[in-house]
Every structure is written in C-alpha cells, then in structure tokens.
Image (cartoon, rainbow, N blue to C red):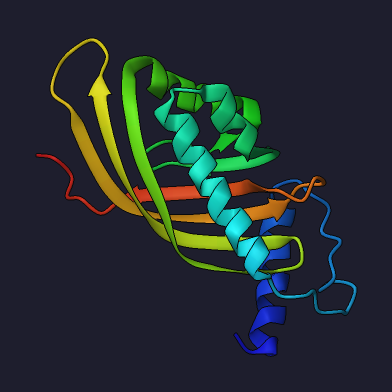
Length: 169
C-alpha cells in the first residue's frame, strides 16, 4: 500500500474509532505516519479471529466478550448496534444459550498502521438448536476494526457482518 494511502487509512481509522468513544489522539493527528502493520501484527490479528471462533464454538460468551474492547460496537444484520463489551457478551450469550455454534472466520485482507487495523473477510456459520429442530447455516462477509490493547494483543473495536445467502421466503 503506498504511503499516502497508509496515512489516509490511519486518519480514517482514527476518525471511525474515535467515534466509538476513544480519544482521537493518533500519529496521523500529530502529523506523523504510524508504522505499517508487521507480519507479527497480522498474525496476531488472525489469532484474534481464531480465538473468537474457538470461544464461540465452546459456547463461551465471556471468552467471546473478552475479545471485544470495552467500548466496542457490534453491528449484526437486522438488529440495532450493540454497544460495549457487556452488551456484546449478552448478545452472543443469547445465541449460545439457544444453539451449538460452529463458526469459521477467515480474514482475506488485513491492513492498518500503528495501533489500528482493519480485517475484511468471510465466515461460515452452522447453528444446531439445543432444543431440537433443523440446523441452520449461514455464510457471509465481515469487516472488523481492531485496536491494539496495552498488552500488545488486538481487540475488536467495531465488528460488522452480513449474510451472502438470500433471505429465506
């Protein structure tokens, strides 16, 4: 990615994440360009997605919630935005109470600089009702905005996804 686009991306991510309740102080705002993501950063972001899939597969709402930042936003389809780690944990917990979940999350693109990144990719989801009934399948795309945590790991600041399948009739 050319340096100009890296600077534009850093500024755009700062504005989006700043809208999530975090102060907008950043390298881009200070007039410097943050370092691009390293291979280790990209691997850590992929590990974040793997941790999400693992916790979801185990029905671990607290484990899924811990992947989100305290001020995160979850933007699922056909529902209002879910705000904050506790609300997001309740959202996923409701799903885990009703279904056994199997999800794979694959990032097709990871970009960013400094402490901000985005991942764009696709998912496959299989739900088996705990109370019986037919299983459900979904597949679609996602866009995540991630922020580096103080311990160096990455967390979801914004998580948005939608199905690629036609709406059932």
